[in-house]
Length: 120
Image 1: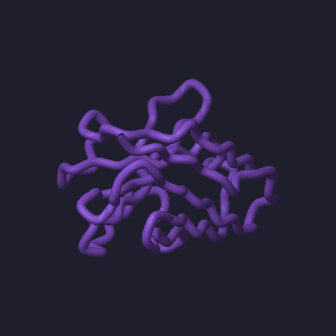
Image 2: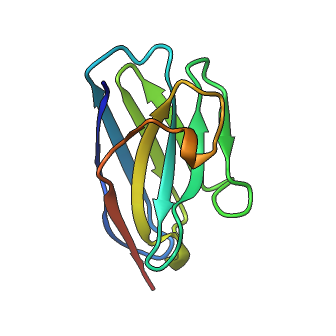
């Protein structure tokens, strides 16, 4: 079992920055691929970015590429979010999987989420 806990969310103005953290516990993460998803009110949970155990990164190109950076260090994963926009407002979730996929259904472990609110 893997337990994931997100932190770092909050209220920020348009154009500002936040750094989200995800701390994992329960088992080794060496063979797990991890990702950030987000869910805005009234919308489905969507993929934001992923980082494989090898270090390979993938970003959703339409919404966050060029503004967000995903990284990991041991049992922690991070999401540096710059140039935030109002449409980035959502609950952000970290997730982990043994699969090489960004499909939400294949992620086995989820955190409880952290709220990010971007005000204009």
